[in-house]
Length: 351
Picture 1 (spheres, rainbow, N blue to C red):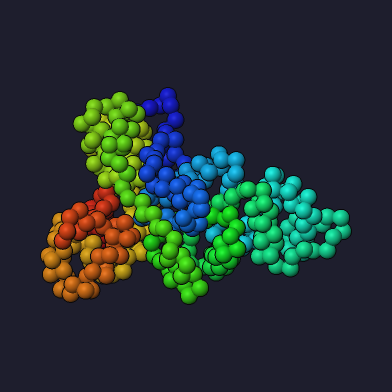
Picture 2: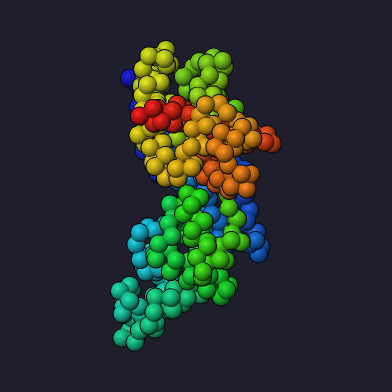
């Protein structure tokens, strides 16, 4: 137990923890796409199971680009009028605000900005106002990154995406990174007017590097490599599990792993993540998971247990893989990818 220091791990979603495992390859992939001249893409979608580190990844991207003088970053709330919020936040950025004042923009009828020299309003729609501001960004060699965490296929998101598509066609220096669960991103890109999102790169957050997790635990807890590897295996590379297990080991000490840590570990995973994941599964998804939870990993055996055709099973298999719940380590096999999810599923089934 470490009473003399604050716990470096966190159980809070969306908060950047003091101790975390970075994803340099995926981070550099995004940065390369956006900073190429010309950029290869202007929209990137990040997906992964709940607790896989999507928000941390989003924050890292924003932080990296914010340090570059030509970049401006704005985070939007997916449950608000995002187009209006974007215009208001862009107007409030000090360096850009001065540029807009010199341009004598007047957006008062839209609820942003101020009236300059009694000039009449220069825009009668928020999209027109944004076009004028983005043109000024372009003239001053600025680039705008918009980040949106946990998007859904709601009206506000569809309106923003439609406007963004227009701004891209007008060749404005505007970029978008959004995170979301697989189902939400799939629904959004399949909307009739947003099929351009199909062309956006999809970054799937896979398990964290086992060696990096082991090194982190070994150094933080001053334990042997064998002990660190034991803890690492318990996380299965799952980002939230890395935080929870580290939090509990810091709180109780690794000598309490079997007595206190594991019971609370299961409880935190269940309460914070797994109950939500489970409830979002269809009944057939759940049946497949329950078969895998009984250590049945051959696809042919799973299909046989459920009396499913190859075509039907393939659809559900692909969905479980894309959701980040299952993993195929070798051809013809399927197993659960989340730590202690097997135990959770079997307990749920027993109830």
